[in-house]
Length: 328
Image 1 (cartoon, rainbow, N blue to C red):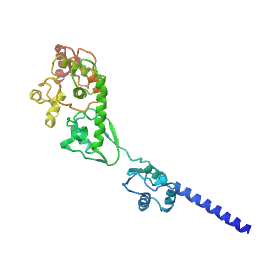
Image 2 (image 1 turned 90 degrees about the vertical axis):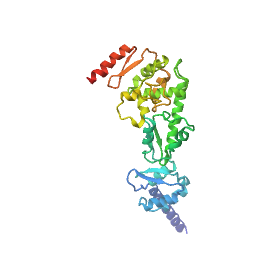
Image 3 (image 1 turned 120 degrees about the vertical axis):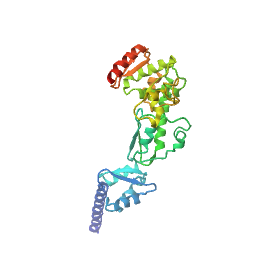
């Protein structure tokens, strides 16, 4: 009798050991996929269906062992929909990635100085992003009001997941611009020639387009502020170009400077009606806190930098040096 009991116990131990080894082997079994394989988990997909899909792709040999493991660890059955990057790691670790919602992240970048037309063109081509933008009510869709959307999208890189919407990305960009502008406006200098934060945003967009040299933004801002404070017209080419829109052929002409548009700052007093681009934080800070200077004029040196002047005589001499001499 004792011998029978010992035999039964021995078989139980052997069976348990074999079962444990099989369990461990299953847990550590790799998912048979090429590295970095994309796989979409659709809404409503359960653990059994997921395993069946992988089995149909020959990524796992069978499902019943994994179903046993899922019974032992029910958290494995909590699957989150999305697009995932599967690897040749274990099947269980790939399932855990889906449990934790570690989806593939895509990105969209708004570049400093881009205008609204350029941003919209780029986002319509963004990978794995639904274009739900309503062109006839874009400002209301993104800002919640009818303010022109130009200038309101903060230049930055925004991450999103598969099938997110374009509007959700742009709303985040608008919220970040609003917060950045609000913070800057609260710290503005005294005696600025604009009454509202929106006017500061307009100025910042002009500063952004006027120079490609970040270190010059404060001096550009100072010169523009000095012009406005002395009732001088801004006379800046980027606003003229923006007013021309699709008619601009890459070469600004004297006729363009003479023709009236609401954005031709050679013809209008003060600021144009809206921003002309998406300004950086640095341009916004320059607009609300320009350094004190007597500069009123500046001319491009042709290398991205500018020569600043305090008098028209100095400016004309700089134009002769950097513009006229180069044309001769």
